[in-house]
Amino acid sequence: MSLKDIRNTIFTFLRALWQDINQKRIIWTASNLTYSTLLAFVPIMAVVFAIARGFGYSIYIEEWFKDSLSSQPDAANTIIGFVNSYLIHTKKGLFLGIGLLFMLWTTLMLISNIETAFNDIWQVRRQRSIFRTITDYIALLFLIPVVIVVSSGLSILVAALNHQLKDIIVLGPLMSFAIKLSPYLLLSVAFTVLYIFMPNTKVKLKSAAIPGIIAGVSMQLFQSIYINSQIWISNYNAIYGSFAIIPFFLLWLQASWIICLVGAELSYTRQNSEDFFVDIPSEPSFASKTEASWKIITLINERFHNGEKAITAEEIKSHIKVSMRNLNNLLYDLQKIHLIAEITHDEKGDIARYLPAETLDNISKEDLTTRLANLGSKLI
Image 1 (tube, rainbow, N blue to C red):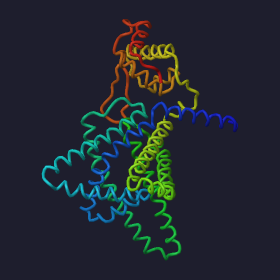
Image 2: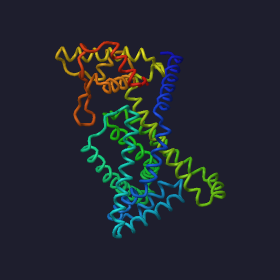
Image 3: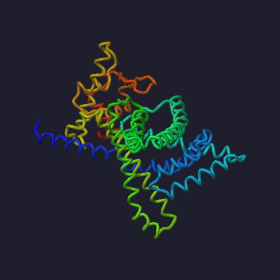
Image 4: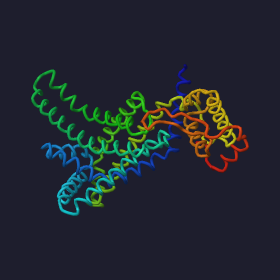
């Protein structure tokens, strides 16, 4: 492949990626998650601080939190004050029940919004069952604070070892380098796990690892840039006073979610890379949608009448030249007009298969066209 071909391929990929980001309204989704995070932030940190106090790490967890929000020192101090006040008041009578309910509601709403955002990126319309939603969300509620506390403890241990080994010629510089590298590593691992766990579909490790590293490094670099912009922020503080911490904290949250969601989009892109190296029209015609839909239901019916195993989306794609993004939309529309049915177990990563919901003997192309027209959907 020539240099020109490589350049054209990269340009086509980036253009398709940008188009996908716009179609999935990632910037708007980041704003929605910023609002949800703002509501849930103090209750979640209250749980983290409460667990840290149980381990005897209350002082260290405050230092960890201030370091994490080093770009927003005023916001960090304000939030710590809110958290301490929250913990004090939750010990009192009625507020205990109301406070716990509010904490549970805001946290579950945040997790639900994150899952919805990731499912939209992955074009997953099948939601977790009630049982899996409860078990997965409760696991997150307990695991996230514990992981934060444990990682804080490990940071303390590494810092102590660095203090003891700093005078050793080889180990001292290596330990210092490891401490500087650890924030990048921890964030990269956290994003990778998030990209695998959160979408309600099977995400391969190799598809999530590189985007996770890109998001982790980008987040840490964004923190550094934000810290170095404190001179400009100080001028802003001179105008708005203490109120300035609110818009800047919101800006920090939104930028963080944009980095996170773009990383999720890169993960989706990597796993479905064949769809991004072709020039896909942004608005295919209704006729092309109808033609592709007819081929899909014909193929599904043939497999069923031949007594073969129900077909998967990947198998359909191998027979019909259509991108996986467009195929997912077609399959969803065909389910909405009751021409096919999806069968799957309630397990994440279980491959969905498709059966006919109505025999082709009663359906013509005109019937299909009418049903799709009444549905009013467009091929994305």
